[in-house]
Image 1 (cartoon, rainbow, N blue to C red):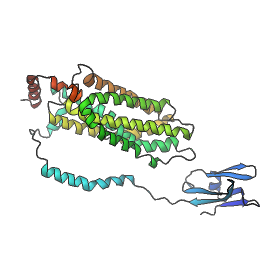
Image 2: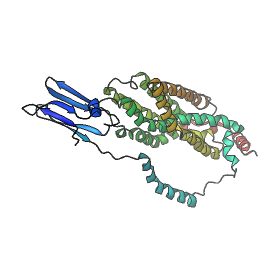
Image 3: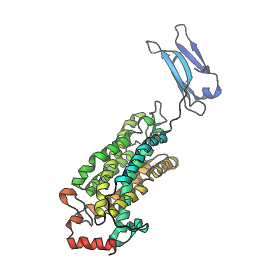
Length: 351
């Protein structure tokens, strides 16, 4: 307990005045009075008071009978170190793969073969960039929002009295997105990856526009926080589901070459890994330059609309170049004749 405040009480022990002895503490102290008695004491967070908190004691009538200022000692949390828990499991998985994963027999393509997804053969380059854009929309967004979510809570809602703790909510979005990713995979095997991407991308657009134009990014009170959280969790739900659909879709796009389907998942994953950096940088930049994150969410909605059009035109609409309607509706590869399939494989292998 700090002895930096002087408390004055009346004859019945009710606090009537509080005086901060230090100038910096006095400047940060907000006292609310009702007549001759103190109703509330709050210390604003500054560089010198950020580790201080006020404790009020009240009687049965709700009147303050004592005021104490305490210094809170907090231990630093190194969230990034939580990832090290996976290291032993990854080492074991690597050893098991090296010993037993020998059933994949593919022709050797060398180092240059890793970049054949960027060739013009079978229009590989076009579909590579299409998949890259749609994967940034799904997993890039998921990872980006996972990093930006706690930052947004602190920046947008941290200025209100009783502001929420960002760490109390930070895990919810990734948890929902990760769970739905695992649960909806089998659904898209039956329904089709392109259809899943079609509807979930529209869901992402709706969520972002709701944030931008619903007032949740420029709140006037803490009452709007609950709506902000629910919309963000909806966006996480859509990005996680979208991500599940992509893992069905991309191997179908490159059905003539399992190697390229696998390469595509690695290639798009590398691009989407920039999501946390890009999302936090752009959201933070928008808040700094324009005073809110609205420009970012409007801009990312436009990007999602472009991604939606690519998926619709190339993979979803009736007669699309490489459609995927799931196990029940068939795929573009299923509709080709045996001779057409062999020709595409021959072109791919340059045989």
